[in-house]
Length: 105
Image 1 (tube, rainbow, N blue to C red):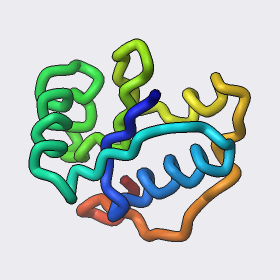
Image 2 (cartoon, rainbow, N blue to C red):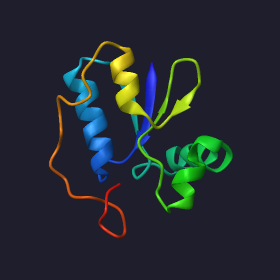
Image 3 (tube, helix red, strand yellow):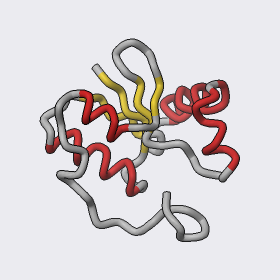
């Protein structure tokens, strides 16, 4: 089963899980704000995988981060939903941007 590391305080995480639900896709949501062990597990990915380099350069957190069934980590949740025959735009959410400068997430 796909694991999604994130926080429901993040608009992108809300959109990701909302679209996973809307498309009937199974996942385990791991809330990095609710559990210190979960945060540490996420930080191991973030601090060691090149996929997060751009996030770190622009001071983003790097969530939602999906760990696929084969262990691959991706930040491209819309692509994952499409790969399963779903539509990643069914749920848009209504939260404001979360970047420090207000430009996005």
